[in-house]
Amino acid sequence: MTTETEAGAAELRERMVRELVERGAIVSPAGEAAFRAVPRHRFAPEVSPEEVYEAPEAIFTKRAEDGRVISSVSAPWLHARMLEAARPAPGMRVLEIGSGGCNAALLAELVGAAGTVTSLDIDPDITGRARRLLDETGYQRVQIRTGDGALPVTGAPAGGWDRIIVTAGSADLPEAWFDQLAPGGRLVVPLRFRGLSRTLAFAREGEWLSSDTAIVSGFLAMRGKSADAPRVVRLAGEEVRLTVDERQPCDEPALQAAFSTARHELWTGVRLTGSEGLLPRLDVWLAGAVAPYGRLRAAPDAVARGLVGWILGTGAATVWNETSLAYLALRQAPKQGNQFELGVIAHGPDHGRLGAALAEAVTNWDNTARRHGDPVIHAHRRSHPEHPTGVVIEKPSVRLTIT
Image (spheres, rainbow, N blue to C red):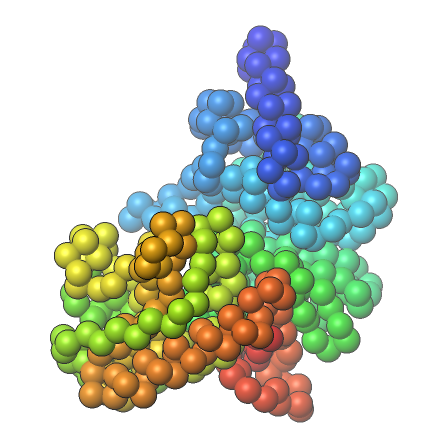
């Protein structure tokens, strides 16, 4: 790049940092310094610096032969939120799973010369690209490895990694992450559970992991041993679909038949405003309070035609049994233009009981958990002899509970 282009990129970077600080994505002086130091545009040379520094979402850097995106550079706000949640410090040993180069460079700034950063990816094309870009930008000290991030990393530091940061969507917390995370370490991972995707920061507490940060975000899925796609039940063709995760029992023909019957509405009196941001918390809380649990998604036209109630594009919490289903919906609160009321829409012969149970769960959240911040997700190995009580989310390697 020319000197003029680099000067323009520096101005864009400074503007990006100021905006990230203003919106609270960057909260630490160390994070601010790292984002000022790393030439972000050098890690996405396929697009203009303006697009790199102003991108509200990820920039795609590799596609498969069928057109699927398989690698990207995350949006600046998400890089910042994840790094602040990870809390890396000088001298730490950090493993990044999912390579791109930019995040590894930021980590190198945060851990300093006394720390180490190892970036791992299953795709040799991606690790080769990351190696080249890191070398070109002066981050030769970052180690690049090719391999499956769900498996143990050979040559891991004695005592484990102080931080493990996963930059690809995962459907599990593999045993290797437990085995190679240091006592007192932190794991940051985009985790899918019950059809939800949340980037979670876990703190290690002995044999347990407990979350203390949840970020609403989406990531490209991991490939390799831990890859596991959810089941999609088509309730009304492609217009209305139910995402069922963790192989929960689900009779697709029975639910299709139920959905074709009349809808029954039950409104809870629980109200939200658009500025509170509480619906994502409720979604997670319900995932740990009711079972089975999935996400009902509908095409905009299906909502407009009244085929489903008013649900957001991120989907609606849904429960079901052998004959019926019920899902969470919204409506504008009567006589309150800036408030929305939560309700339940149910279908099928057992609509009354199933709808009432989901409505009661929403009311319980409003009475007991609404003002207590993000729900806490606890994870422990399936091999652990202690079995948690309540609603348990069974993953291949771990059991999750939500409180």
